[in-house]
Image (cartoon, rainbow, N blue to C red):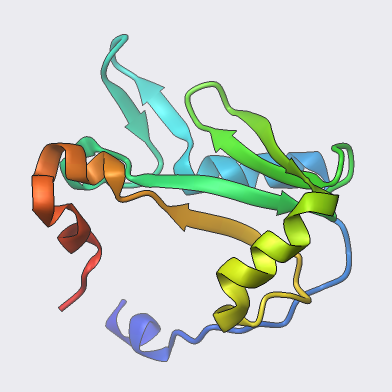
Length: 134
């Protein structure tokens, strides 16, 4: 594991090919999906969370996904659904402004946005510290 972590590199080699809805469904489930339910209030997700707050929300800029309109969507893990938040026409400036430092303007990226508010509700002013690494 240590060797794998030490050799890990980010690669920004984007394809122009579309993905299908089944592939997108799996990727979204893997990012924040529900893998089990113990009760109405206790669920098990595919990812860990500091204080069980699940402070990440997953957004997808779905510009090359077969079977759904081109738009930005928010993923709802509890129901495994997408909710449209912006049409493609409205999103280019938002994406370029928000993520210009990542050079993603050509990528039509899947976008994950950090929502610290959920962690801060429970952890007060230290919520942001759950995202810091040593």
